[in-house]
Image 1 (tube, rainbow, N blue to C red):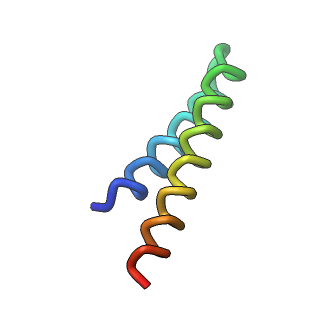
Image 2 (cartoon, one colour; image 1 turned 180 degrees about the vertical axis):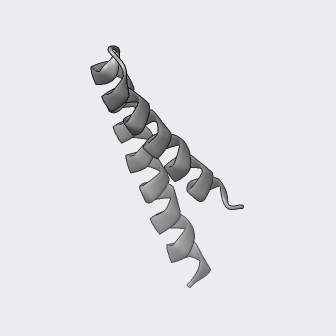
Image 3 (cartoon, rainbow, N blue to C red; image 1 turned 90 degrees about the horizontal axis):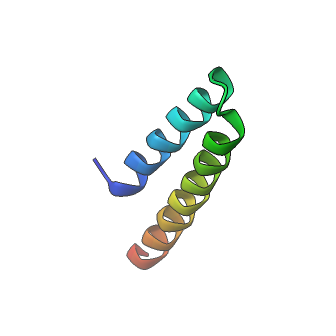
Length: 50
């Protein structure tokens, strides 16, 4: 499993937990940061392969 895919899954889980719990805003921001970083890593990795 590629590292960027694991980061996307972690980000989605954090977003869901952030919506479902009282510490929502903190977890939502962490989830957004993880998703953005994973998307950037995915694009950079894809660009290097081509």
